[in-house]
Amino acid sequence: MLRAPSLLALLCLMSACASTQDQGYPALVPMESLLSDAPLSPSPAPALVARADALRARAAALRAVTVVDERDLSAQ
Image (cartoon, rainbow, N blue to C red; front, side, top):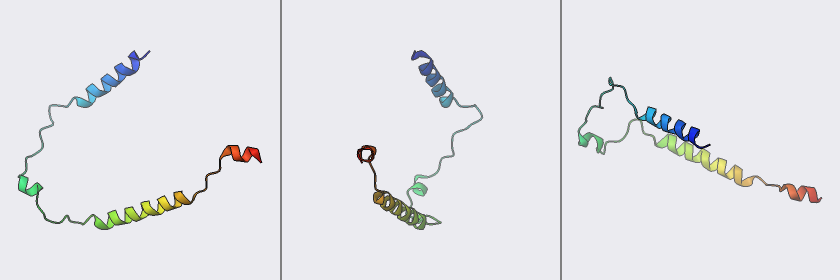
């Protein structure tokens, strides 16, 4: 019963791990360029602030929803 799903999962994992021969390794870059303190351009801060505000507004809207239990409706 579990043989077919496990075989399918194994085949999917094996195909995901396979690679073609034309793909090379990524180019190596100096460590200093990865660890630099230079600011990112463009700055992601405004987009992150806008997303956080939208999430806060969504959370407030979800908190305001009143949940009615179905059992309460049938008792009336």
